[in-house]
Image (tube, rainbow, N blue to C red; front, top):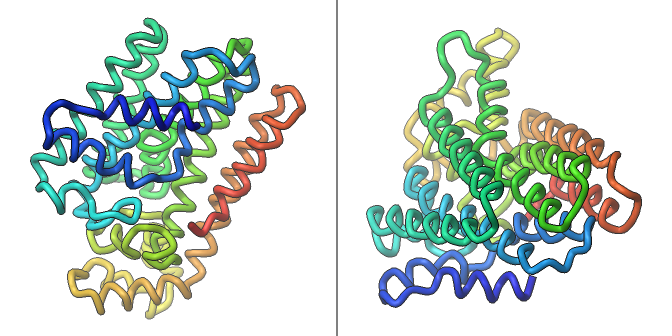
Length: 314
């Protein structure tokens, strides 16, 4: 990871002062580096020493960081990784262009890994864009909103985690059955990761998560707890208080006190526990995909990681 961080710093460097400052902004803010960690860990299932592993790890982190610049503009998120979101510092246009610049850097780097990696990266990027598009447009008439949302999570978030694991196993020299197993693990653990993030958006404080609690609620971005609550009300299974809470969620949440009030009500509602249980179930499904892997510390670490992600609080 030390080598990845150094290579990541080199990858975002630019001779242009504005581009350099803005590109380094989120990289310098830190983050969990979960995707490159998954790449390196999957590589340990092979020989784990090939230099391509570092480049692959940088590619997936660059792709993730680039997407965050765009996501924060679309969601009007004020904070990312405990730092002001880039669009609040430089404006929307600069944030979008810097995201594009980082996508370009990732593309240039993945080209050095060969045609298979290029195709994989491009298909992953396509899925991420489709996931964001479908989230923006919402479910079609007659489509189950919960199932629609789970597909959005698979495309927007889980696809890059699956690719992170697949690239690691590929460039670690693993056999095809291991490559496929870790990719399937990454896909499912990615959905668990985002469902847990939905819980985090409501249950944590800003100091704990580095994000403003209720940001998705304020921007009326669908999350699983809200979808489950809305589903109850639409099916006639909710209480009067549930219906009133849905009406408040659909209203103006620009006022901090109004947002804090709905966050507090959702924190005490059992749809939050239901979402946490869904995350745990997906994490168990992810762990089951590890069966073809050889027993050892890597397999154990991946299983532990799935369990920790489903119940994370920071």
